[in-house]
Image (tube, rainbow, N blue to C red; front, side, top):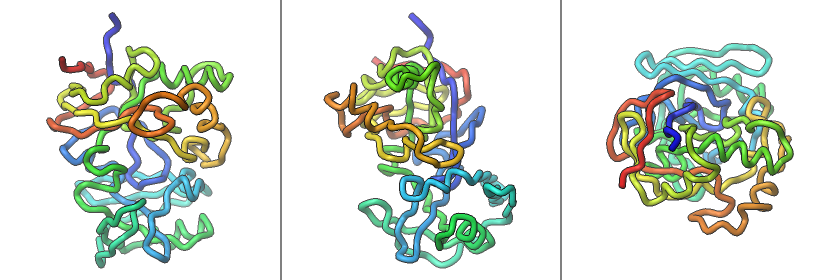
Length: 260
């Protein structure tokens, strides 16, 4: 039996912007502090993400929480950085729910608005971050074999770029879509334990190139062609999400054990 291990970890300090690969994370009960700490809203205080504005993925965000320092590198190479200062509170429309956040003072909103041609404001989420499904979705995972299976369906050689699916944890040692069976079970990942709550249903964001945000792959049609009838918690499932129940550090290469 193959050993199941962590093969990759990715973060996006600003929701919707390009994912960055990291070697280790600290997973708390609300997720990873540096992951989706910030997000964008429009003039009506509504969330703007990569599904609506693919160009966000052309911007690289780096965030050091201990120093409260945020650095954005725009598609033209311009760097905008500084200390994060949270300003006035705002009630935002976050998907179908409301989420309290604070407008971030500094140069980022003006620079990104000019770069992408749309008025945007950068806000900082509360302690739980700007995570889909709240704490229940604070950890997400997908296997390399599932990525390879979807690539096969697309007629591609090798695997698809895992960043396209914006998952926290990439897993090796599983058969394709075997992570589906984690739903309802507790899984030890490195030092942490996660109870997986459901399957991640997919949207247009996965059709976009993870570096440019340009739509370049019909992932929804591909998933529908062989996963459309799969019994799952959400339609077009690809990967799983869960709630951390034991905090701890996770590093690439760490073992993964499904509790009996």
